[in-house]
Structures are given as structure tokens and as C-alpha cells.
Image (tube, rainbow, N blue to C red):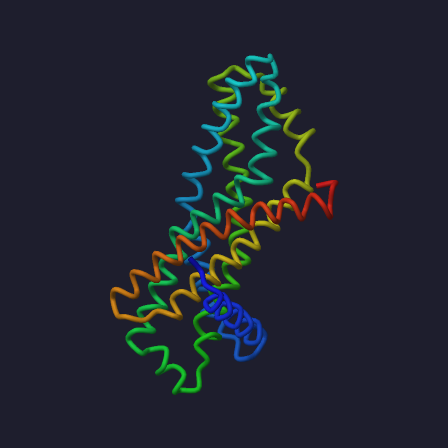
Length: 250
């Protein structure tokens, strides 16, 4: 469980991130390296997960709607679910599993081997050098991955609905474009940006606080994945409620 002391340390860590966010020097190579690691190298797992998520969801929804002779709504249902909820949440969870754990392990290893202290002794801020590029990359790249997840998921659903369940192509596309609009897509991207920020900040925080040698690195990695995943699911509810209350047109 997260105690109040650790929560306070996390808030101080977040404040330190924001204080270093816009300070020079801006090391562009660090940012591009994290963009590649978090974005491009995550493409295979995102594409694979999105394809089969859309296919399974279309299969289940299609069989359910056949009971009410409403098969034409499969495209709209899958599109709404992917754009609003499934794409941002599943994308964030996949990024946590692949990148969040490695961030915690990498920074944690540097902490226990005193590389972070050595960095400070050379007048280089560890937060600016290690944390800022990772959190910025997470905030920007997770929405991009979520958008791709949504698109690929709809394609997977289309293959199952039209190719296997004999749902008319026109009915699938027309219902999809009629019920799913830009507001649904934007709300999902906003969630994905928040998830990307939170998961990378938590992963960096857990790595930064690592103690106890190799055992501590493993413990920090596990905690980063678990805490980030649970936080994403909790935040999803509150973000959904917030968006519905303030922007009912979404």
C-alpha cells in the first residue's frame, strides 16, 4: 500500500519534474531516444494487441446483437468502445508492461550503483537528465499509440464482422461513421496523454527511490508496474466521470 509519506515524496518528485521541465539545456538527443524507445519500439505489441482486441470484441458483440437482429450496430459499438475506453487504457497498460518496467529498472540500477550521485556531483540534474525526457515522451507518444490502437482495432473488428459474420460492409461503415465522431476520439486521446504522463512519472519515481542493491531494483520494477497499472484503472473512472460532467457532448 502507498503510505502518506511516499505520496508526499511523489508529489515533491512531480514538483521537481515541473521545475526542470522548461529549464535549459535541452538535450534533444535524449528526447528523441525516448521517443524511439517508447513509441516506435512499442509498435509491435500495440499492433498485435489492437488487432486481436478488435477481433474478439466484434465476435462477442456480434453474437450478442444477433439475438436482437441488430448486427449493423457492431461497427458503432466497437468504434465507441475503442475510441473512448479500450484504446487508451490497453495502450497504457501495454506501455507500462514494456517500457515502465524498464524505466524503473534502468534508473534503479543507476541509483544503487551511485551513478545518480555521480551525475549530481558533475552539476547535472538527475531529474532533468533522466526523468524529464522520459515523462515528456510518455505524455506525447502514448496518445499516438492509442490512436493507432483504435484504428487497427477497428480494422480487426471489420475483418471479423464482415468477413466471418456476414455483416454487410455498408451497414458496418455507415453505423460506425454515424455514431462515432471526433469528440469520442479526442476524449480517448486526452485520457491517453494523462495515462502516459502518470505511468512514466511513477516508473521514474520508483526507480529514483530504489535502495537495497539488485533485490531493490527488482522490487522497484514490480512496484512500478503494479502501481502504474492500478493508477491507470482508477484514473480512467475519474477522467470518464470528469469528461461526462464537464463536456456532456462527449
